[in-house]
Image (cartoon, rainbow, N blue to C red; front, side):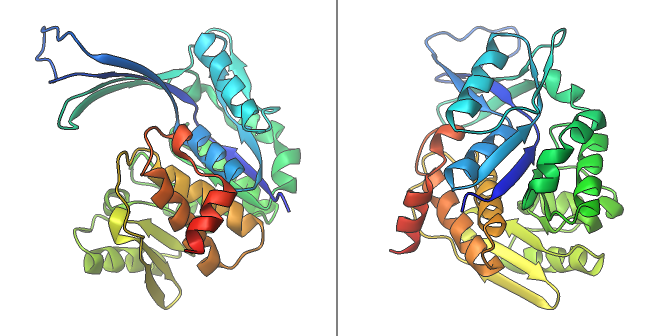
Length: 305
């Protein structure tokens, strides 16, 4: 069916050095392995939705530099519509400098760059795509005023809106109430509510707190523990299959993108959650973020096991 999904968000390039140990201030550690990895939560979710079967339009702001050119090329390779991607001539594309130690510990510095120049006017320019969409997806690596404009416009056009509230921050209640689906992980849920989320019982309690504030559907992604869905009087857990995880980066983005593709196709919420859980469980068995996103065929095969 190729349902239409519009993803509004960030595109970054991650520069990763894997070292035997992290350096102290003023120290140089040599012998590391260098990787350039496609990232940015918006681009990750766009790729996840596209591979899961949706016809995706990406709305973002990318610099006029080699990183930006490469990011655009990657999105187009996934058959993602980039007509509404703005280019900032004077601001570099978003980038992250990441050092990863032998035990998985890391040091990360992020330069948002052109992502900070995605403004409400860019959302208005994408009105034709949003009007035709079956689902709009947004995250928080772009200005909050832009996210608010996107979800407000989706509401006005009766387009269901999914908000992935990451990176974690407190959000206006009005914005949360305008979302159709909210997809935090445990730590993001704790930030939103101020409540502990150390175990399944606490996660469910915090999700119900958001529900009483008027949030329609809360889908809390909890890694190997699965997903907690809270809607109305219903709080239900969906288990995650047992897999050998090698890299969990991008798993939450995979869930949000795959879920958006399924609900845009008209599938039930229960089906969409199971579909997205299967997708995320595949992604963690592979290195990288965008490179780990599974295809629709792989997701369906995993669901039928």
